[in-house]
Image (cartoon, rainbow, N blue to C red; front, side, top):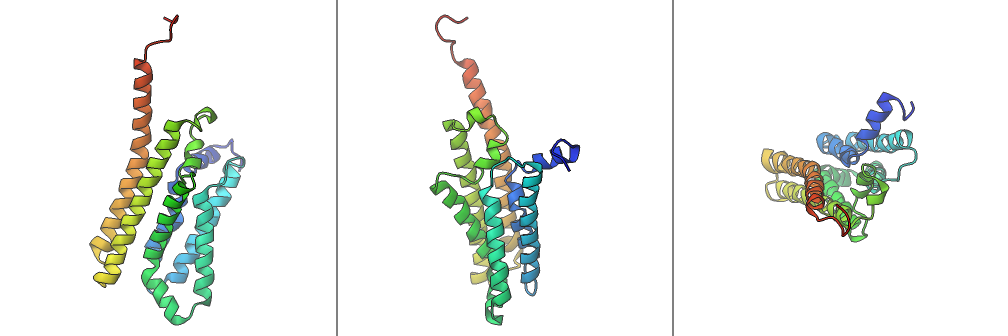
Length: 216
C-alpha cells in the first residue's frame, strides 16, 4: 500500500486525529471486566501496535506520537503484569482496570503539558504548515485542547472510582458509563470546535488590522 493511493490518503487523514491514539483505551474500556482482563489487554495492545505500524506505513516521515508510544508501553506492561499476577492481583486488576487506565491517561495529558509537549501537538502539526508550528497561538491552542482531554480523563477516573469504591457498582449506568462517555464526547467535540474558532478569530483579526504604512 502506498501513501499515494486513495486508501492510503484516507488512512493518513485518520492518523491526523488524537482520537486514533485513544482507540486502544476505548477498546479496553468496552471489553475489560470480570474474566475478560487478558482479552481486553490483548486486544488493546494489538490495536496500539497496529496504530503505530499504520503511522509508519501511511506517514513514514511523520514524527512519533507520545500518546501512541504510551499506548504500547502501558498495555505491554499490563499484559506482563496480568500474565504473572496471582489470582488476588488479577481480581484487583479486573475491578480497577478502568480507573488505572483513566489515571494513566490523566498523567499522559498533564505530564505532556508539564514537559511542554502536549500530546495533541504532533497531530496538529501534521495539519498545518511548518511555518506555524512555533506560533504562540498554535501552541496555546494545543495546551488548551490537551488540558480539556486531561480534564475528561480525570472526570472518568473520579466517576469510575466513585462507582467502584462508594457505590460498589462498577456497572452503574451513570457513574460507570454515561458520565465517562459524556466527558469523552465533550472533549472530542471541543477538539473539533476550539481550533476552528481560534482560526476564525485570528483570520477576523488579521482582516481588521490596518495595512502597514505605504500599503493600500
